[in-house]
Length: 139
Figure: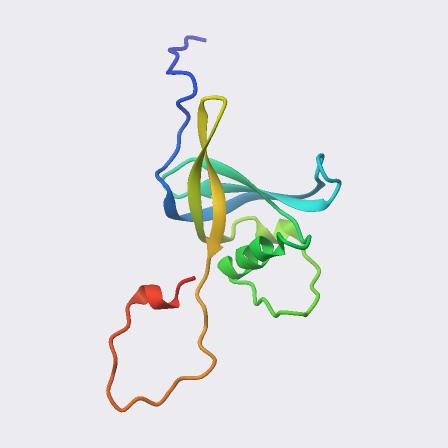
């Protein structure tokens, strides 16, 4: 094998921002650091790198799991328990917010949050049409 090295630590990253993703793998695992159940996601970022993310249902971090589920189109109902099958996530698409993390001189993208459309409860009667930007419905 012939190989031409690149600059060490210059992995593929994209600038911070919102990106479309596809779930290429999802596995239920146990966190080595806390022992909590978690789901390890592998996300292929559109025109970007592969990013790993870890979702738990623990207090203080379940918001990210809720937002992920909503982002891939799952109907999230507060207070209603559901069984989660990580295999059902494979091939699903959504939008996430990425940021760049640097550790020991190496840069990589990490998921800050997941983006989803907030549905309106009921349309309001308006005498005059009002202009709304598309971003008004995004979280």
